View: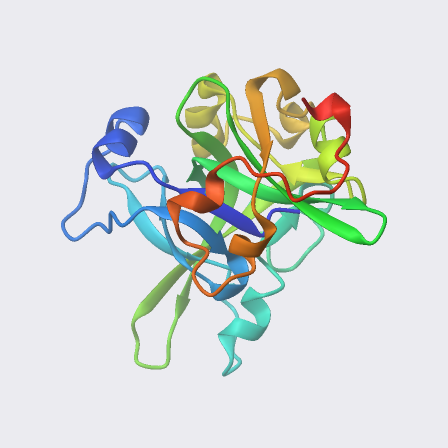
Length: 235
């Protein structure tokens, strides 16, 4: 699954990359590490001509509870295989698609009793385009809260070695797929082939920093040897 992510691109980089406008007050503080379970704000690409800001953890428009975090914690990811079955997602597949820009995400490899963190980032482009769904929920005060989920699929060869328990990964779009995804022209069947392993870099990172009080630091993405045996095929 994808529960830890980063977004360190500048607003100008994202605007140029996706040919979108930069709205006033668009946040630009780099995110080196973010846990989805903290429901962070994110710069998100939709069919809108401008970059939008949403919270990670989808709150369906029909939700009528008091604690939106309870449902958002269960909608950080959406399995591609069950998108059209789940109540939170099935109405969104054809009309509420989005792209979640990422400069790299984190996954853990299980080695006996140890969990070793890895940072996965693009080999060439500065950003991954993760396929997502979004929704709008009206809060008690009448204001609108926008939120999103990241779609996941079966892991490719590389990610199967890293995420070697559940063997999942985010659905990542090729550049030529991006606008067709947003406009609904790209079918789910077209995403069944995982993003190529050779387009992804990977490095082991510091477990102590990720588990520390302030993981949102550039050092969290730097190469590190945690002292456990890692599979040689990753390198």
